[in-house]
Image (cartoon, rainbow, N blue to C red):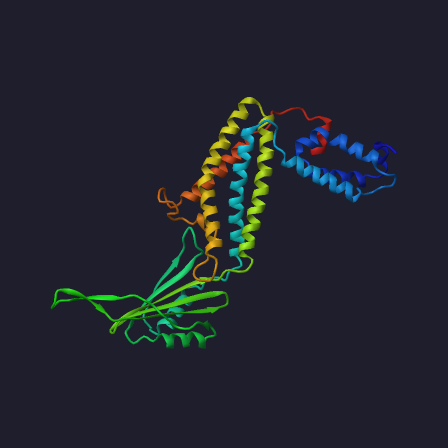
Length: 357
């Protein structure tokens, strides 16, 4: 039974082989695809319609191995591949972190925040509301309400419990206040009653803190979404996927650069070096956030996330607030230009290249 007979009698086996060969890089399929298809069909049994399981597994494994292979005797390609792999791992961790944060509870709107602040303070006066975002933490809320010295933490705790919140015990807080004594021309310490408790409901945590003197005080309410069990595993999964994708991109790009003309090769390699340099600071910031996410994991405050590094803020002591995001965009643009530039010179399409179509 010849390959020609297979092609005219039944194309199903050939289609299956062509699908399996997609595991190989395009450059490999262009050179050897037709020969491989012909050989596989000649080795097939009469009437065979699908590749044997072992055969399919071998083709897939061999294809992946070729995709991971770098050009021989190219030490700079190895260095670039390692750097790109680590960089993509960082961005993969950010993607996993973002995906995990989508499972968090939504923060309340402004009207609900005002209601929670009133419940905490027991006062009808307006509170100062803030939505707090940083390059390290998921967004949280914060309010401050002025109260008189009669504020009672236990009554505030009971109000939350009556509305279905799970509340903790009241814990004393340290802190002191001072006042200027005009008679003695000196500052004197004022007695204070400071305390705190937390309340949880529907994936949200609130911390209520009261700081009181005999005459007046303030009640502070901080709120954040609780982390979910899949949050850290999603970060790890994102990092692993990013590492694999980074190496695959680096290997494919290395062969494109090698096969390009000398002028294109130099220009593409230079652009790629600049792109990696631009992405270095964002990658370091993202890995720093990965360490914080694991080290400080727990419902003791707003969740440390990886992707929050893109939030405008002074992540590094030098540079503008939008530094991480701007460098990421610049690096991505430069990398895209390097990939586009590193293409082989146009050549007439051969019969062997038809398999890549």
